[in-house]
Length: 241
Image (cartoon, rainbow, N blue to C red; front, side, top):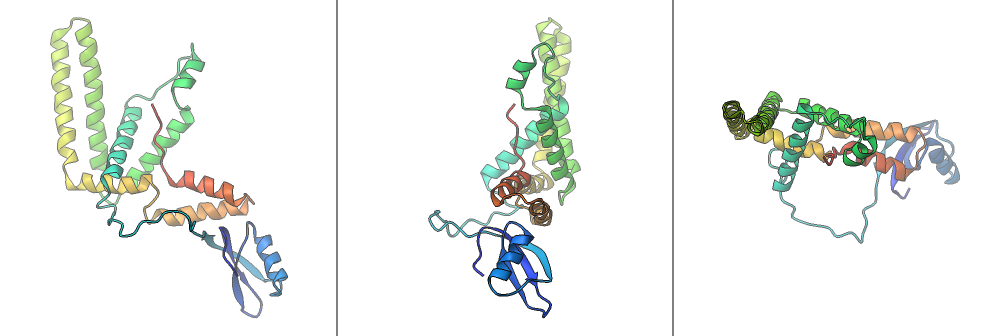
């Protein structure tokens, strides 16, 4: 049968015949088989999702070999940005003012969105094939550098110059340590994997994505709704702070 965009079902008959049918729900696959003269299948299983390419969409050939070990520069920078936001939120989670909740709501994403972001990035770090502690150490040192810089500024504003100098030295030390860690092979590989995880392109994500898609199909959602939810599930979107 001609494939269309949407869920695909494998219909198995009592005489061991089988065919693939597209439709939003299993009942639609059964109806299609019956209308096509194949009869009513004994078993209907979810078999995946089919999509016809847009023939008018521009295509590229000879794409560069981009792998988790060798991401493109833009993806690497985006992964570093995501880690920066992740580190900032871990060091100082923003709490909206109870005196001006409307102003805080307009300035910051919702607390649930920020927590989802923290959870998703934390999970991606835990799933790295390299030791995730190297990423945690970079984040920890960078966070300590931010805190030291803030305390240096506060001490200088109040005229506590000796204290400001101490915090300045700590800030520089933490930054230098984070910089050294970033040059390690393990960290560079971690950034490559995180770049792929952010875009939902890691091979190990495919099974989880298909299970999520199957669960959505069982709810009877439309193909457009399923596609939108899966796309949001696949990617890690950085909040704008």
